[in-house]
Image 1 (cartoon, rainbow, N blue to C red):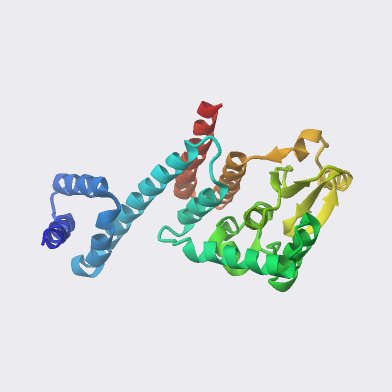
Image 2: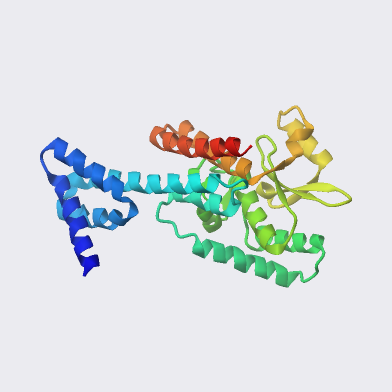
Amino acid sequence: MEALQKERELRSLVGLLDDEDPKSVALVESKILGLGDQVIPFLEEAHDRLGPQFRGRLDSLASEIRFRTLEADVARLSAAPDPDLEEGAFLLARFGRPSLDPAPYRRWMDETAASIRLASPSPEPYPVLHSLNVRLFQELGFKGNSARYYDPSNSFLDRVIDAKLGIPISLSVIVLLLCRRLGLAAEGAGLPGHYMVRFSTSRQTFFLDAFHQGRLLTRSQCRQFLLRSGYAFREEFLRPAGSRETLARMMRNLLSVYQRSGQSAQAERLSTLVELVLTRGNRQA
């Protein structure tokens, strides 16, 4: 009974958005924004009921509520000393698809990791890594999106998994998350202009280039790659990149795409999330 009463109240509140008095509408909007996600179904329902002239206002309110929820979730995640990379990547994906349910994509990673383990039951890391490369880049066909490098979808983990296309950092994050499930010791490597996955053993350190379908490079080959790309080599380029650094870089890449394409509203909102990730990190330090 209480639930029905609550629904009626929320529906009535949304209905007040058609008031002709701007002050009254501003008051209603303020109250709606304070209610959070629970009011979104009623904003969507009101699309037809209030007519097309109100749809822009309804969409704007729903968008703002979703962003505030996302902002709070990013703040919570960023407060941790070592933010969870997987959760952070899916929070960023929600920036592009606010209603995203990450569960199917987490299951996909679980199932993919299980198939890799089945193909290589050896406890040794090299056979497992070889099976990961074969499964992800040869059988499933993941590769770098050279044709549409600056498409925002390349930064959203769900869309990268769906399309099997991405940029170096998003493809590398998928490799890192699979490695976590497989028990492989892997780290990010934030090379300038080209993020990779770093593997270290007692004998050597090598790097996986997910953008170029899992090719493996030595430290010397990474150095040559950077020099050919126009960067003066520094040893620090090959150091491990933590999850906070990786998440901030994913966000900055996307921010650059929005700025490049003139999507100022998206860029402004994303800047807020980048600042949250970095500011919380500085406080921890």
